[in-house]
Length: 68
Image (cartoon, rainbow, N blue to C red):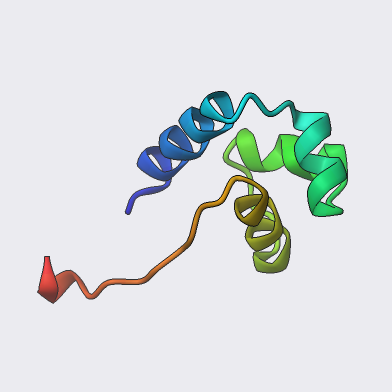
């Protein structure tokens, strides 16, 4: 999944769950600054991304391009 497509999905999920950046930061234990960087498409560590996605009830999976 391309970064732009992933971000669109995550932003839609944030809206669906009616979460604010502050909510996500509080529930994930990730700083507001890092959550903002994530939603801006900037690089953050995997553990931070995983914590943010857990709050949004989303998973990451890897698929071979050969299988597509």
